[in-house]
Image (cartoon, rainbow, N blue to C red; front, side, top):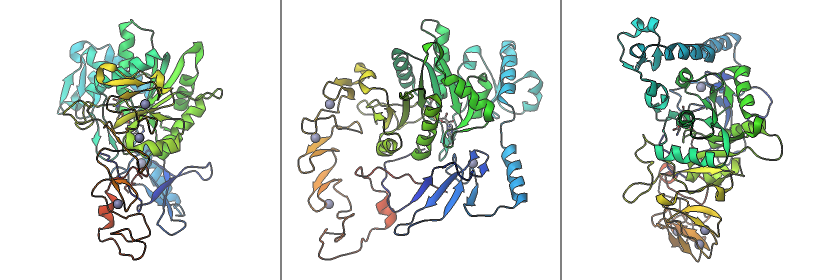
Amino acid sequence: MDVTEEHDDSFGIEVVLPDGGKPAPCCPHGPTLLFEKVAKGSKEGRRFYACSACRDRKDCSFFQWEDDKVSEARLLAREADNKSKQPPFTQQEYCNRFRKFASLPLDEKKFCQDCQVLLLPAELSAHSAHRSTAVSAAQLRRPSVLLRPLDNKKSNAQYLFTDRSAHFLLDTLAALGYRKVLCVGTPRLQELIKLRNLEQKHEPMKSLLLDIDFRYAQFYSQDEFCHYNMFNNHFFGGEASSAVLKAFLRESDGEKVVMVADPPFGGLVKPLAHSFSLIAQTWKTSDVELPVMWIFPYFFEPRIQEGLPSLTMLDYQVDYDNHALYKHGKTGRKQSPVRLFTNISPRDVVLPKEEGYRFCSVCDRYVWSLNKHCAKCNLCPSKDGREWKHCSTCGKCVKPSWKHCQSCGRCALPDHPCGEGKEGCFNCGSLKHKQKPRESGAARRGKKSTLCGPKQRVIL
Ligand code: SAH
Ligand code: ZN
Ligand code: ZN
Ligand code: ZN
Ligand code: ZN
């Protein structure tokens, strides 16, 4: 998903988080979310249920007004449809298949690329017209390389960590003493943890992958994978599956747990934050919070802090193998906008010097080389990796491309719609006369702003 920083204040669909009252109806992706259209000026909009996981109705067409009366027949049909869209095997069955597969001689190990499944000998004939490849022992340990990344632009594009980012995460967590990593939407991290354990050079780490992509179920045992939806905290395997998470979160023998989540960037922050706090509550033993790393673009910082106030954003740029734009910032290449949001103390997360990070002793955290400390603001102000500059009129540091605008009374892009947001004239900002904006609403909506946190657009 290509998400850009966008400021949108006229389009209002908000998620209403479940309050334990009436249960939401289910789509194939578990309980739906309740949305409310909030039109400007009117008090309450009509509410409706829609899929939590798919932002495109082409992927999941579920729609129901909150006050709709649904017939018994309709409910039964819906239930049958939901069932028909579940994985063909249970996690137990996937496990047994994997064991069988692993014991096959090398020349019988085949993977069907069209169906994205490991094939057992009895199934070969049914896939004979499909493209299949041989699977080496090494490939079997790297499902994120074997499986084709999902590229559904709107709901579920999979962006896999580069070795640089994956190893940075893993080394950091290991150095901080974590021995159990809850991988939420981070299949490549889970894979790396298991590979590292095989080296037998380090203290072993345990990991549990929670992901909606059940193709990964083929490669892991029941206590290593749960088919899970992070937008509604739904375990497709029911009680037995959520019990796996509960057991994993129990810290026996002093094994410290950390959660690392890398949700799809188009995902709505509010339900994600809600799910992550539910996971944290499951873990909670005292006043201490579950250590969390949430990987997400920097421009969602206000939204994330609204949902989970204890998280702070680090300067580390996370980059991805299969995303040309989200690359690490070295001269000439575009910098990745993706960052780590964490409740781990920022000074403890050592960012690599050789990649251009340094320690700021005033801020007590590692920052990107171009993020220069501003003595007036008393912080390292840059969010986007560029060097920001101080505006003495605004009394704060702003993006390098911004100029102070007298009529708006703040810094903005030189071509900003001047005067917007004030009562007065749209063109000159004068409060004595008024002129309606000539620019269309849609055009204005695409404009960038960091004064407000970006609103997230819900496409239905
Ligand atoms: N960088 C990660 C992959 C992130 S891509 C890595 O290299 O391991 C986003 C991940 O979230 C994918 O694995 C995708 O399958 C998963 N995902 C997408 N929607 C989800 C949902 N609703 N619930 C749980 N996982 C989801
Ligand atoms: Zn759905
Ligand atoms: Zn600083
Ligand atoms: Zn400043
Ligand atoms: Zn202006």
